[in-house]
Image 1 (tube, one colour):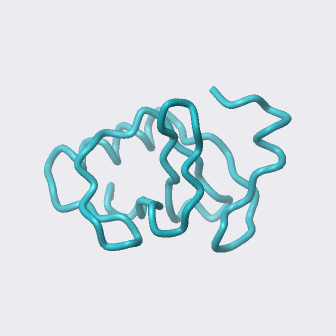
Image 2: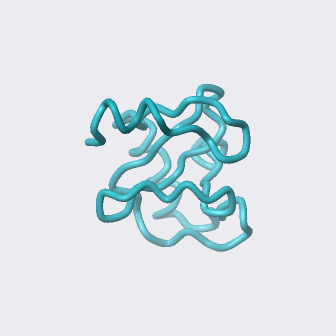
Amino acid sequence: MIDTDFLRMLVCPSSRQPLREASAAELAAVNAAIAKGGVKNRGGNPVTTALAGGLVPQDGSVVYPIQDEIPILLAGEAVPLSAAR
């Protein structure tokens, strides 16, 4: 869980939209897609490790992974949520 005050300062590096923590349902859907294989991040690299947490912009288009409690806010590391649908 990310500190609320810290989260309010964060924005999507691509769209500049505010971010929120990914819901359990969003993470479960993305992780199921990752387990099946074929999920790529915006940078075109395969995503093979399940996400323990993530941040989602207002439009719900992508999830930015949180690794070791650190948000990875690089546009190329974002995982499209459409991969989970």
